[in-house]
Image 1 (cartoon, rainbow over the protein chains, first blue to last red):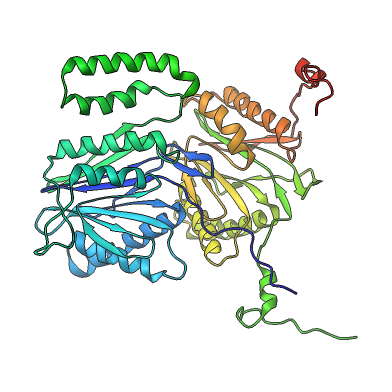
Image 2 (cartoon, rainbow over the protein chains, first blue to last red):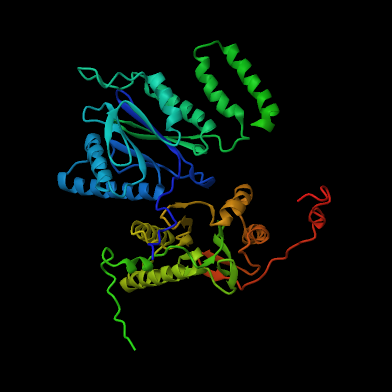
Length: 267
Length: 245
């Protein structure tokens, strides 16, 4: 008798997008709060950012949330043990290595988690580490992972102009943007990703790490197709208006009001 | 007459028959559970049916049970796996009571325990084929969460499993408020259950609504909903297109 195979999958993709940007003395980590399965939404308020109880490293993961939760628990408990053994918190590069090892430990039944680790390194500069599902990682200046990553990453490449990793001597990929500019950029990319990725939306959770502590901001994102165009449009336009004149901005906002009323049927 | 000695199924690698011990597909299943937080606690509704494939085999299954003093567990999916989960929880609550320290397991703890159980079974490729809803109140705080059979868990103000997630959740997203009274909560749940009754083939018109507040658990007697089948639009459905399919 042939072996019966299970007709269920141990994996599921709960969607979502995570982004992190490193600055000279800060690090911004952001993720949306939508959790989906197939074409259904399970929760509009599910946080993908995990504190690790470390004040220099914050982990954000998208993918299969049961694996993400298990992974976060493992890291949290390993960090606690580290604190007991070394009488200090783990540094961000140390946490990065630990995460890589933890992921590779399950190389033959992986954690379906797409991680971005953000924090401040030993010198107080921002650092972002980006991972694949089995633990290969790289220190970068910015990264996006998850369902909206293909939409966001090219835009970040354009705006943040990362130096080639092949250059010698190695150049830092940290962005010269100020912290408010980086937060604004993050809001812009999420507003745009929400438009085209069905798994990204609802709310955006942003954590800003600096030497003096962690600050959290929450921003509303588009929940459905027939929602307020004005809201998304106005965020994008405010960015454009910094290049153009104020009356151009006014014209665009007026246009968006018209669009909202007329294009309802084919939005 | 031959007497077969039971084989020790501990060594799964050598023994192919060990595979037959794993859950491959569900046999007797319960359909949706719908639950909401309301002013004083949590309300959970389920019907009493147990389907054996397409046959409605059992019509008196209680799919919502009280756990300890502070929680309610509702399950959809394989009924035998639900009964096994109840046995696990019995042991958990027993050990908790044996401490006799004045503290008792709250809904958050039970939800966490169940998430770990479901996830670990999924890791062993032998899942408990259920989607569980865990609701409760402890120290004035209401809690409502859900765990799927592969360990995905979350908490929210309203949850629904199976068909309920598709049909009931949109109604709840539109009409749920934080300050729902008991009567309004029940009306809202009945609205959802009625839609499920009309549209889910494995639903039966015999439901129970369970309530949990700081004071304790009350599970209602089974009752049925009034249904209306005389909508004019369905009286002669092909009126607009005679002869077509």
